[in-house]
Amino acid sequence: MQKVGSFRLELDHDGIAQLLQSSEVAAECEAAAGRIAAAAGDGFEVSGPWRAGFGGGRAAYSVRTATQAAREAEATEKALTVAVQSCRS
Image (cartoon, rainbow, N blue to C red; front, side):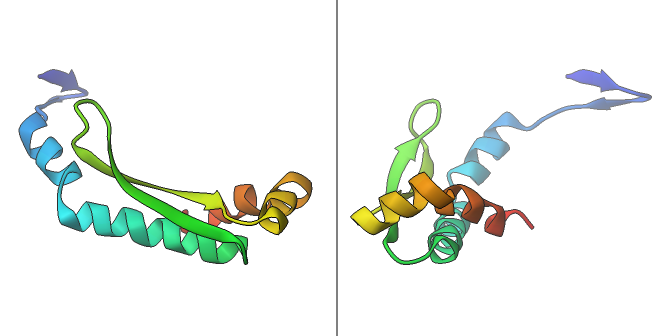
């Protein structure tokens, strides 16, 4: 427990872990990766899921270049780097 301002904040660590390992959070992570891949353009694809985090309990996805043209777009235009902003809203 930690005192924050004039109240105490107690985190439910087991509940947080359960939430992070839920299928709903995994689905949102996959959807976010899909939005990023679509915003980056042709030749970018979603990779995953795999287990990540401490103990491997959380789903993780990434977006990767699947073609030479996509690699060139990232190298010269930062297409994937810019596309990450598409999921921050």
